[in-house]
Figure (cartoon, rainbow, N blue to C red):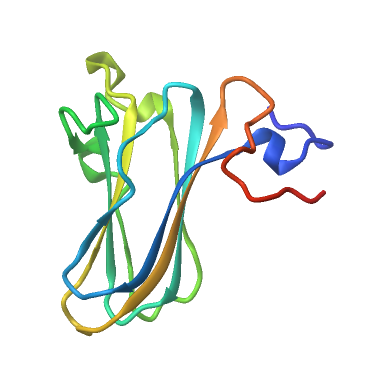
Amino acid sequence: MPSYTANFSEEWQLIDYVLGANVAAATETNSGYNSLANYHRVVIIIHPVALNDALDVDIEEGTSTAGAGAQALEAGGHDVTVAAADTTPSVIELQTEELDVDDNYDCLNVEITTANTGGSSNYFVCEIWGMPRFKPAAITTLDSVTG
């Protein structure tokens, strides 16, 4: 359970991020498969910086960081669409128990596909944060922490 006095960076760890810069319409961008074996919870935050096309965000799971056995997480239950007019972040939350743990799925990929409507550049950021099983969270993926 998070502590009132704990820093966010002690409780949550940046697992991965995607910087979508000048992404064309009808283009798929992937985070790559990240192991969630040492995390309880995951939060995916999609920041629509400047969109001309909607973003179709699909959450996929695999049995390895190479994407073995790739499939939709919970039949697409966590997938979202970010409209071209959206200006505020979209947040997807999940517990690692929602992965197909019976079949050894413990890796996650965020697939972001731009629609083919605006036909021009799209800018977005996707962050994947995890609540590690063992505290404190590592800060090696961050440039700095000020608190």
